[in-house]
Image (tube, rainbow, N blue to C red; front, side):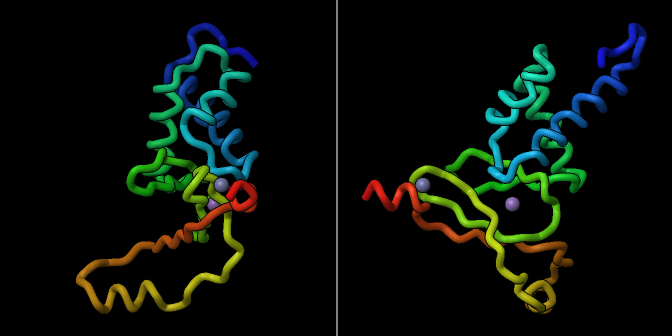
Length: 136
Ligand code: ZN
Ligand code: MN
């Protein structure tokens, strides 16, 4: 579907954002902004990496998606906004979901020990993925 002439920029941004969101939700690989740019470009050949990046940042701020950040590694994005845990390969950077029950009560405990209003928590395990183990 092409935009009609005279469409407002706001509608164009919303359509781009929807496509970026759809692409992100279609995979479980926790892609980087670069990965998503390559995916989205098939549908929006004229989109820029900057536009993809800005939309991802905004959607993360709005809580529509999650941004997975670890010091020294490229940011990855997750279409699943619900709290869940991850495992990351320290060699190749692969990030998988971890089907592990959420730790009950940890946010309440954290709130009790600080003066923070705790909104959520994150937990990431690190190790070597099956492929990287084979290369040892
Ligand atoms: Zn690996
Ligand atoms: Mn995930």
